[in-house]
Amino acid sequence: MTRYIRHAAVFCALLLVALLVNATRIQIFQAASYDDNPANRRTDIARYGRPRGDILVGDRPVTGSRDTGEQLRYERTYADGPLYAPVTGFASQEYGTSFLEHSEDGVLSGADPKLAPFPLWNDFTRARNRGGDVVTTLNPGAQRAAYDGLAGRKGAVAAIEPSTGRILALVSSPSYDPAELSGNDAAVGRSWARLNGDADKPMLNRAVRQTYPPGSTFKVVTTAAALDAGVITNLDAPTDSPAPYRLPGTTTRLTNESDGCEDLSLREAFKWSCNTVFAKLGVDVGVRDMTATAQAFGFNDPGLRIPFAAARSTFDTTVDKAQLALSSIGQYNTRATPLQMAMVAAAVANGGQVRPPYLVERTTRANGATLSAAGSRPVRQAMHPSTAVRLKKLMTEVVTKGTGTNAAIPHATVGGKTGTAQHGLLNAGMPYAWFVSWAQGDDDLEPKVALAVVVEDASADRGGITGGGVAAPIARAVMKAVLNSSPGSGR
Image 1 (cartoon, one colour):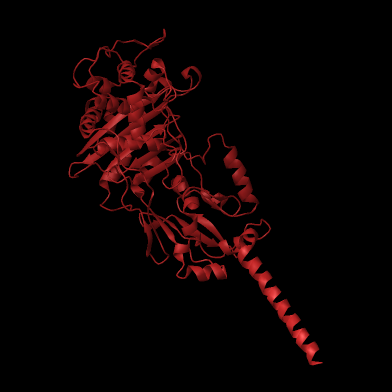
Image 2: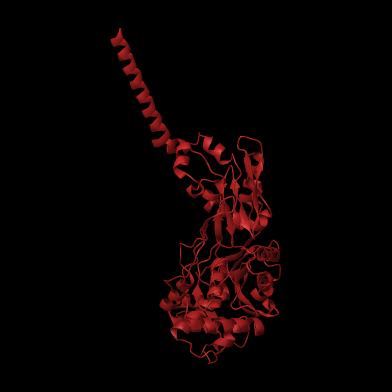
């Protein structure tokens, strides 16, 4: 009898071991596959079972969480949703996340291991920590000025602090309210379909995800290339530029919007934005040096992240001389995001150095303790420092004496460059109005802001659409907001 009991005990022990082995196999080795199974709602229930961390602008949360009392308990809410949508993106129970809500999801949702006091214990228990917060670099006054300046017109504004790369404003218009996509009911589905079907593309982040022909604002890059290469040594010397200018190897004649550009000096040609002078200048510089300078500013870089990805701005490296002439005035295949053109202006303002732009100042625990900080940023030299000094002077004269007078600010030095970019079949599309600029207050030791503004559908007759008339006033309002803000505000 004892033998049978012993056999039964051994058999039960084997069953217990098998049960433990199987439980270990499922809970540890196969846990990931079960977590990723679409039929498993436990992950979603846990994810939305507690409030999400917040995104902060100027130390004020622009996001929140609402207790619905349902199985997926907390939905995302947004303060000034359309104003900050190009930065926050959306966090939807139905459609996932975008922009900062996506790139910083680990911190915001509580899934980041750095949030756990005992990470190994959390891995064992499958527990989720309280979400952390993301503190942005935005200046709230500059963001509001850019949004109000665009006033619903298609376009975008990107503003940077030149010495650091901090993004001070990032606005895309028209915009939308991300709160419309937060839940999972039928209304969310209707909002998703409406927003994606809207011809004006309100969910498109035009500041970082849309590229445009930069038009005459690209002449800043061409000027830098010409000065660095030694093609131009005297800003006031005649440039031997005919008007009109026959594109090399073709019968096409390039003209100017204004008279008096023939053989004009670089100083005057920059001030009045003479196409013929800069087209010939680009040809004289050559493809190799033009490409090197453009890429030093950030063109053709597919890896720019702020932390979410930005579209690649392009300068064609396989052009003939006629195409190079057009590329050098921001046409042909040259395309840029507003963020990229803000980087160009920032490089001029920062002595020729490009600081990679970034949007997240730091991430914190819910109690405010810092998890990570932006830290120092690498530097890339886009042009010689002496070239930057001369370009600053040229851009200043555009605002004091040239096409950019609408950007002038009392008690500040402002440099700018206007642009009107043609596009569409046979250039039949409504021109894009551009303005790139930087500003330094009289009491400041260095420029405080550099930015780019593009307006796609300016409310004016085609002939009256200019960067100086349409985009420069928006730039002026943004720069004033930054210059008038107290030190450290918006950080």
